[in-house]
View 1 (cartoon, rainbow, N blue to C red):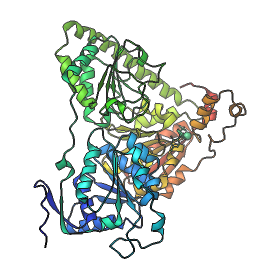
View 2 (view 1 turned 90 degrees about the vertical axis):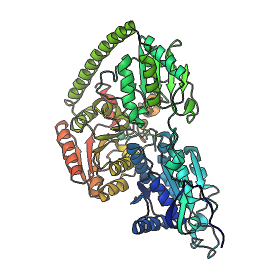
View 3 (view 1 turned 90 degrees about the horizontal axis):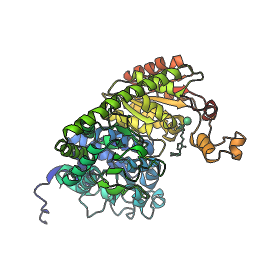
View 4 (view 1 turned 135 degrees about the vertical axis):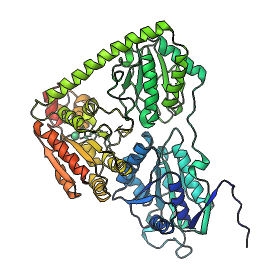
Length: 593
Ligand SMILES: Cc1ncc(C[n+]2csc(CCOP(=O)(O)OP(=O)(O)O)c2C)c(N)n1
Ligand SMILES: [Mg+2]
């Protein structure tokens, strides 16, 4: 008999009969609590290994039955976004991977640290080994290179090969996914490889034994320069989009903003709760073109050039753990300082530098700005309250009223997932989120994120209300029935508020903006932009054993939202559809509220 192979003394031993046992063990030990699974003929090994682990007391994630791959991946994203830990998916060969669809884009752009997997068509000669070809379909399922499907959207991809250590490969992929800049990784697992024997035990390093890279600290000289600029500024501004990905960044940012009375603006692509929305410094900043110093935090598009570009003599400090936004291709923004660190590290370092630099006269000048911004905040809050109330007087129903009423029924720790698109501005105005980790948008541009993400978020955070505010078009892009079924089946209920305007803003307002004098607009022909009458969203909820209502009158909105939340608290997913004018009708009403 050959000598057992010596391995690194840090690696521990785990029970495993087959390679797939090592895969699930390394997932669980690497922080994966849920494996969102969509059935396929060649991936029974996941089911077998999770069941075996349960019997033997070996580590393994919970296998969650999901009815569509897009929902599975969006659920993994939802779970990862609320826990800051990875989640995993498992689907069927190339076709399951293709069905992940736009969620692959969302995973990359979020970015989310998820382990995306798929089986591969068995290709061993029939009968030659366990897991070999045994069905005609397997000849059809083998693309030239399965990883190529997702390669542009992942940090790494790998096909599990016979010479690998299976546990190590999972740990390594999770280490990559979780180290900044975070992002998705893809693994294909041939059935033949998954079924290789291990003879009772395996050993590998876990994700944390390999170690996740700690966030880098900015060069102290850069932090000092940034602090000097911010202290000297007359009209400074912090712009944030994704910094709240790391909930710790919120406190660090509050400390810095308060020290120097820096207003914080969530910008165009803000997809996290980056700064408490009720804070006097939130939302009170200047336009980007009027600011003299800008601190930009994880934001690829803080302004649209050239109209909104900062003036030539403004100082720009750009913070992003992905150096010079390398994941975005065409970037024309200029900056005086690019800091490839996390916003939390930047905020702390600049704070420390600033405390040593502030003079008495700086402090009194900053105090004046603080008072001015506090007064501005009071004005903004009064304006938003006034607009919310005024919206309630309009018939037909105004979307702002729906958002305003939603803001009133949300608990302070409720998680809002915003896929409301053209109505997102109203949600942002009225949700009042001020706790870290309570507001999320997808971070990408693919419709269909919401329902799956809401399910994944609720599964991972059962103690919190999860509310999805969504456009009617985007809800349908996300194959909502499988998501609602999962939500109902796993007792992970969420409330969905649908803006039923029976239209796509792209195909209505967007068409008009592109061809204002065009033939389509001239003839009021919005084919391709309107879907009226819409699907019955209340019945959609009922089809998944949930609760549904459509509301048309302003007075009905608040009570219906409360009823929806009550149903959620009793364990049922609920949909409240707010029946609104189409966007063609809305364009005729004009801008207004
Ligand atoms: C998968 C996908 N397909 C198409 C689009 C293009 N798109 C952007 S916004 C939009 C309209 C979405 O409609 P809805 O959710 O009803 O929101 P509304 O425009 O009514 O606010 C579309 C189709 C997209 N972003 N993602
Ligand atoms: Mg719509």
